[in-house]
Image (cartoon, rainbow, N blue to C red; front, side, top):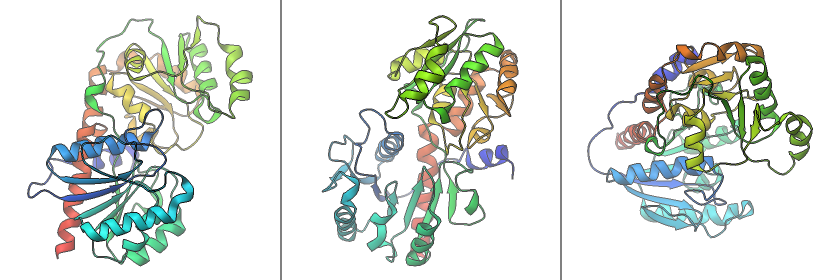
Length: 360
């Protein structure tokens, strides 16, 4: 199955099943609140899901950092550090045993489900990062058919794609947070938005801009340990005119930055499971030009909402093809495949499926 066929297979999950409200327990990792105050991609996904499910009348309980602010019952973990695994595991499992929800959905450590894995309660483990085969193997043995898995891209779960209990649910963005810009100026700049580190490719974005003769705006934070890369490979190329660096941006600034761009550049040098910023760009109507790594071929439909490229030179050549892209098509594809509505629909359908299987 090609990357494009995979995307279409997992997009448009259809209308959610109707029936009684479900009781759903969702677990996050303890370190970052939901929604996050600053960085926290997984926590943003959980926030969208919790709000969507609650809005549809489901009874949701979230196990998360005590500083979380969500419209459902919140059960704060007793420990908010990675070293609190055993305390949090027993707290989570004891509460689940008392409440007996219809579905348990984990976005956090698989270890938190250890005591409840043998129970008949349907369980879902969602992966947003590298999957540990050993953990999957022992969890499946303990669960005895009651455990389903999801990954945020087909690329992430490619080793398990043929298994019936594995599903792709793409990451998403809240559609109403982003404004679509239907047209930009002919000389609109290219934009790079992400952490300023080598594997994200900001230095390659500068090269794409140079080769294509376009201006470039770089935005994003410089995390500890990556200062040398910035100072030696990026900063010398910033001139304040053809190449500008504006630092980290908030949601409003992101709207303006992406909405005013001719294209968003994704020159990644690693197999990123899912770059949420691609969905953010599409939400603004901005096409994506990226290297063929990770989930890029699943998010970008060639010539429809951007271009998948083999090299920096290919990316620069794709800039000249941007007039062929309809920015409205970029927004439409985001709404169908990478929006909060899509996310809630997709998970709700899985919940109903596993809940019904548990009754058989």
